[in-house]
Image 1: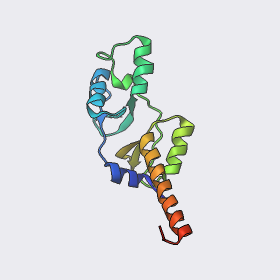
Image 2: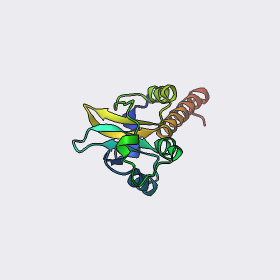
Image 3: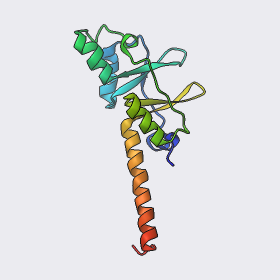
Image 4: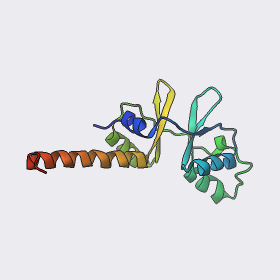
Length: 146
């Protein structure tokens, strides 16, 4: 069974974040530069406070006619987080993301951020797992004569 740790080992443990006092514009610049759809929001004590995503920007800033150059990330970030650990399996992640309508899951151990996974990371892991299972079944059926 593939676990979150396997995803992070594959893609890396790097993650991007902003401070709640950063402007939304600054957050958008980082997301554009890194070609990512969300950032963690972490305070000066390294405490995870939330996630700021393109969805937050479009629904909380643009639709309300606000400006990204003066709006603070901390005022518009998603604060209700669902977090997972290194030992969470990918199917549990998929269920959480689907049922809670979340696209991103921070990975924490003992309050420390270890990484950040997206629905794309989870789907890729599921596809990989299914491909391995198919190959194993083919080898079993054909007795390794492929």
